[in-house]
Amino acid sequence: MLLQRTVDPSIEPVTLEEAKLHLRVDGTEEDSLISILIQLGREYVETYTGRPLITQSWKMILDGFYSPMQLYKLPIQEVVSVTYADTAGDVQTLSTDIYKTVFTDYDSYIEVKDGQSFPETLSESAVVEINTTAGYGLTADTVPAGLKNAILLLVGSYYQNRETIYFASIGTVADLPRSIAIDTLLNNYKLPRV
Image (cartoon, rainbow, N blue to C red):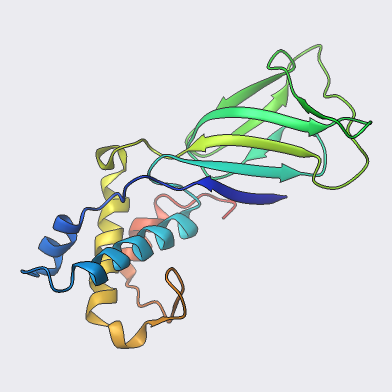
């Protein structure tokens, strides 16, 4: 299985103003740094919990059909499409008459409907593609307060301990300082299979 984000979130769940208030920073000299720290905090929270925060699109690639097919990156808002390579190698879109989706906060999956069966696929790897929309919503107020608070705590930790954080490239951080409070907040939302 391969998971790939195809559309990034359009905003961050924590605003620059919220982060600066949390950090007690006035002025604009460090706005660029703080904005990067917000992004890093969000990415850490999403990776740790397995939950996209702001609406984004994901593609899951599988080697074939099975029932049920677990969906990752919860909460899932919708399954946009399920495509597959048929036995001749042609790409087909799976009819929604064949499958149903089940979405919960901790488990979402696609399963074959009663009396239906999944079609045969080409006998190769990466022949089924499931495209989903995931996340809590398009606005920051849809994200649970605990996850936003964890981002603020991470931003504060990164900001105060910036000498222990090494940016190999934007989005890559080594030696992440965390606290028990951050772990406690995130563990409340962590998916069992992450």
